[in-house]
Length: 304
Ligand code: ADP
Image (cartoon, rainbow, N blue to C red; front, side, top):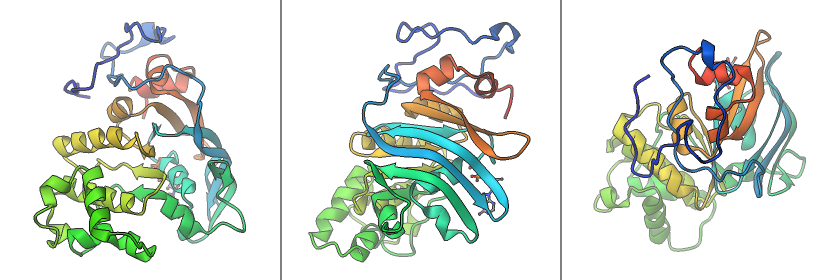
């Protein structure tokens, strides 16, 4: 794995850093000579306790038909921070992400157990409208998927459906500004969203998600189709958005999880092929002093 260029805000924390005094991994003696652990961004509050929980996931399990994909997942997601879900392909990261805004229910034959709450309000219940849940908890996908409409209409789309009564021009401008795209598109709002570059399209999709004024934004490998420069722009944007939104990101890129997230959850599907949560904690702790040897194997590149 190539070493990432250091980042402007990326005062890099290594194992020797004074903050947190992480202990070396237990089996360091057996570690390969090339340490694959990523560099860490300095976005650690140093606090193991989560003071302000936005999303509470309690004992969530999910079946696709007869196949159980995840089991017994519980974790608290902090408000206005970035939480990363990492783990090998197929361990259930995207499935868990989609449980947070009830997107899995759009897939036939899915059965879900457990509960997810936002601000203490249960999201799975007879009186809850899943469409409303998906408005409050927005989603950005792996591949940018703008509608074949103008840039303006892409952003205005969801707000129109929700009967937005305010100034639409203002909402579109604000959303594009928040998504760090305004300066690049302000003179061509009537052009097709599909004419933008991949990175711009992804920021357009982020603007579209923000325009319906969500509280939480879920991102499912949002950079996997982007080049390194576009990836860096999205990562910088995520950090900015965390001031106003709670963000959960699925990434197969550990470097990215280490760079952008405050907390990291490591998931794994073992012999039974059912995804479990192995370890969850501050990103610095997970990457420098994992408590579970399976986490350590993964972050040091020995597995996955
Ligand atoms: P990850 O995001 O960690 O790669 P996924 O959540 O995509 O994992 O998948 C977890 C498991 O659920 C995998 O075994 C996958 O094949 C299965 N799965 C995912 N989506 C579906 C689906 N729509 N229908 C059936 N099985 C699925």
